[in-house]
Length: 323
Image (cartoon, rainbow, N blue to C red; front, top):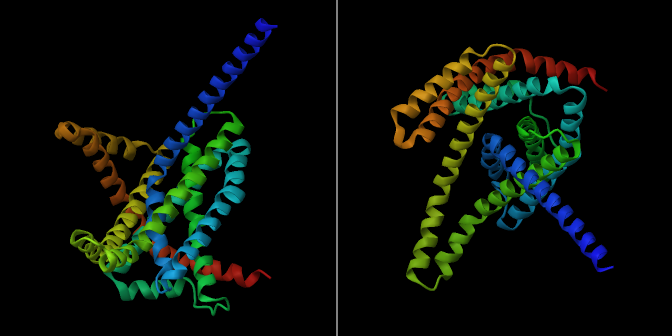
């Protein structure tokens, strides 16, 4: 009896080790996939705070919570099943979908650059893309709906990039990794957004009620620094969109046989790493991101007239034909 019990316990321990190893593998794969999607994640965090502008302080966190819940639904109910089905029945579609997402990121980033450099022309371009329509919903509901729509596009890019980075073949393991990526990234992004939108209120609280001079000074510094920090975060988000979008397109082109640009970028990155050996890893990454960014910016700028004169008219025509 005791021998049988020991054998059973040994089997349970072996199963526990296998399960722990599987969980470690899932966590490791999820971390790797999440890092691959870092550019889209940074942009998601940079874009979201603007959706609470103009609302009272007591509505900021509820709005962020609504957007976060919408993001979870986007990822788990729609995008995760779609990504898994594509990986099973049409894996060849993943690269073109990635490239479309990269094109969108490049276009969005380039449009922001265009808006900063030529604001009047950019406003005319935006009006031409989508005529103003009166929204009968409340301002808060309309803002949340717009944020969730934007999140859907960014989440699609995140989930597709994550799927492409997963190296395991087991269907359920891939599903678990994608679900972990979706939930983890959503918690990270919207947790950071919640902290960002309340940082100035926290600074005011410290400045007014802090017991120490140092605490009150830190609160005043936080209040003064947040507008500049938010502007810097927006710039970082735009840069991330452009370099990630450009890199996705170039990598996709290599997958279709046009590998010369990607090889040239790899050579440039190696040159940068050898030139600055003390920071070789960072120098190589920075060179790659810089060239990807230049390509993404040029590609995105070329997409602006295409969106205005081709895509938008076709979209309006399709909307008129739909019931």
